[in-house]
Length: 195
Image (cartoon, rainbow, N blue to C red; front, side, top):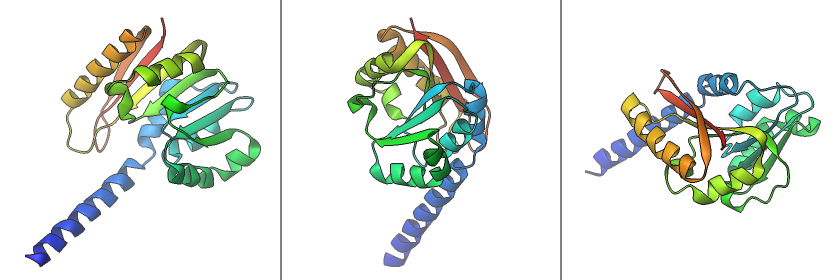
């Protein structure tokens, strides 16, 4: 019995490791950077930056602009900062351990984005109110989601419905919803601005 439990535990850990290694592949983040059409002077905020993979791809496109990345996990901020040490040294990337609902940034951002941040399809009132304060006039919000492997496009459609309802409740205007088939699961981006 204990051998079977040990095997299952090892299998779960191995599957999780492989899943997150696969999710760390840059394809989804490259697509996100393309969707956002980053300009050299953009000031960007990433919500829930995790290990900082998207920061590496996005901040290297900046010249005068900066990318501020927040995450409520201090360990992730340390990992992201280490990964992007050269961008931190050059002043292009700033990492702050804080949740979006508790952020007190004074800057205004031309683009704000989040990848797989569950708050946006749950009760997102506090987070969206914070974003309204942080978004520059005519700024754009990008909410990306890629579910675990094996999940169909139908799941993303459910996420889109919930995110759109939350955005509209807080007076955001939906600009576009873009789906892309991708390995290991389809990705969606909901683009919005303040109405």
